[in-house]
Each structure stands twice: as structure tokens, then as C-alpha cells.
Length: 228
Image 1 (cartoon, rainbow, N blue to C red):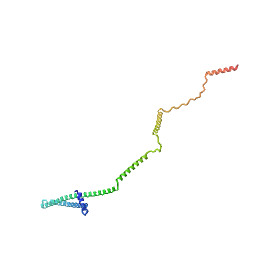
Image 2: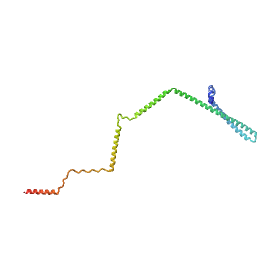
Image 3: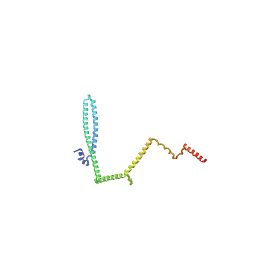
Image 4: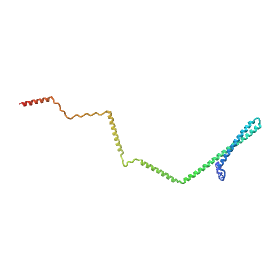
């Protein structure tokens, strides 16, 4: 049978009927330890005194020296017995303290177990499962709502993605063509300034020498005709 049951199993009923409690027993053991410790100090002092007396008498008074040594031996024997007693009492006190601690721990654990049982009495595992399922469903619904809200809405306007991509590529090509023309202009230099157009009106030409001669002949002919 364990020390715990020896102290609290069979003796628990006696303690309830006026027997010693663990706390009382521990206190009594501590008092006994204190008393024996004082006894130790007294014996150690007496041993020192007898040793001093034996040295004092020495060869001068051998009888007194021997008596002092005998008393010293008795004190040392008593001191050794007290040391053993203190060790036993210390071991007993520690065991009793541990047993008392275990009792308090078990008592508190039993109290906590009763409290837990009382708390669980108001719970139904089926209701707990149902509640957890409801929570999971609500979380899933909330996630679906958040996803729906976050989607962009076109308010009925639908566009052909291929058509939009083609238009975008056309715009990009125009920008590339403009950029290419700009680069070619920078390489070839400035354009040549256009010259003015040649006027379309024909200027009168200078009369030739043959025509002058013909005119002179006509004048001579006219003069001859007038003289007839």
C-alpha cells in the first residue's frame, strides 16, 4: 500500500473525527526539527569545550583529560544519533508535504472535473455540430457575396473582344507608322522648298530681220502705187 493511502486512505476518516491533519503533522515535525537543531548546536559546543579541557590537562592531569575525552565521545555519539533522527524526520516531513500537495492537487482536479461536467451538461453535441455547420455555411455565403460584389459590372454593355483587339492593333500600327516616318525625316534632312510655277502667258518675240525686209518692200510697193 502506498504512503499516500496510508496517510489519507485509512487515516482520512480519523482526521475528520478529530485526528491530526497533514498540516498539523507537518508543523509538529518542523517543531521537532527545530528542537533537534538546537540540541545539535548545544552538543557541538560541549564537544568543543571537552576537547579544550582535554588539551588543557594533557599530561598534567591525565585523569581529568581522560574524563573530558569520554564526555566528548558521549556528546559525539548523541550528535550522530540526532543527525540520523533529523534525516528521518526530514524525509518523513517531505513525504507528508508531497502527499498533502497531491491531495490538494487531486481535490482541485476533482473540483475542475465537476465544473467541466456541469458546463457540458448544458451542451448537446448534435446542437454543437449543427451550430458549426451553420457557421461554415454563413462563411461560404459571405465569400460568395464578396466575390459577386467584386466582379466588374458592364450595365448591359457587351463588346466583342476580338473586335476591340483588332482596333487596338490598328491604332498601334498607326503609331508605329508615324514613328517610322518621323525617323526617316530625321535621317534624310529637311524637304526641298518648291520653286514657283512658270507663267503660262507667251511673251512677244522680237521680230526677225527677214520680216523687217518684207515690211520695207511693202512700203516701197505702196509708195510706187500711189505715184501712178
